[in-house]
Structure formats: structure tokens, C-alpha cells
Image (cartoon, rainbow, N blue to C red; front, side, top):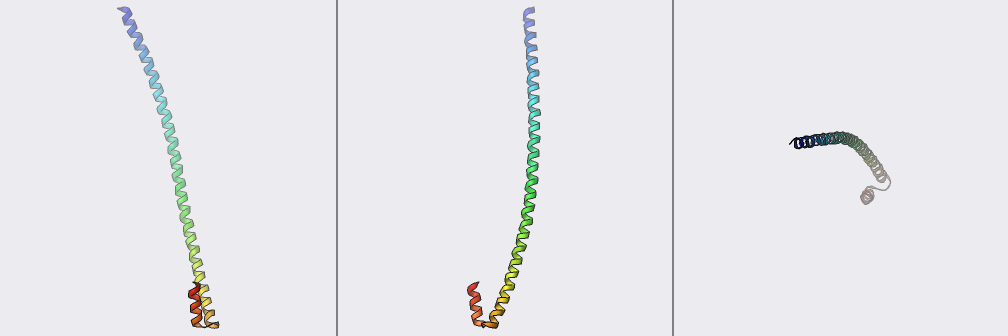
Length: 104
């Protein structure tokens, strides 16, 4: 009967030691997972920051590009007016209107 009790105590001690090892392994896994989660979270935050910067740069360049287009359109209108004036002076109104409509 004493041997059986000793065996049970030994088995329980082995089980306890194994449980402690299991808990230690799981604790390490949780620690590793938490570190990886923090790393991923930081990377996501970095990517979101980069995305925000790129969106701002795209918006800035779009505004700049649109301003350049407006400037070019204004120059084109000025050139068209000058060309029309030259046509009226040297060629005559009817031929000038025809040539402008064909060129545009």
C-alpha cells in the first residue's frame, strides 16, 4: 500500500513538473507572440504613416500639375487671341475663322 502511495506521489510530482514546463513553454510562446504582435503593429503604423505621406505628396503634385495645366491653357488662350488678331489684320476675318477652326 505504501508503494502504491509513493508511486502516486511520484506520478503527481512528474505531472506537476510537466505542467510547470508546459506553463513555462506557453508563457514563452505568449511572450514571443506579444513581441511579434508589437513588431507587426509598429510595421503597420509605419506603413500607414508612409501611405499618409504618399497621399499628401500625390495631392500636392496633383495641385501643382493642375496649376501647370491651367497656366498652359491660359498661355494657349493668349496665343490663340494673338493669332486671331494677326489673322484679322493680315488675312481677313472669314479665312482666319476657317483656319482657326480647322487647326483646333
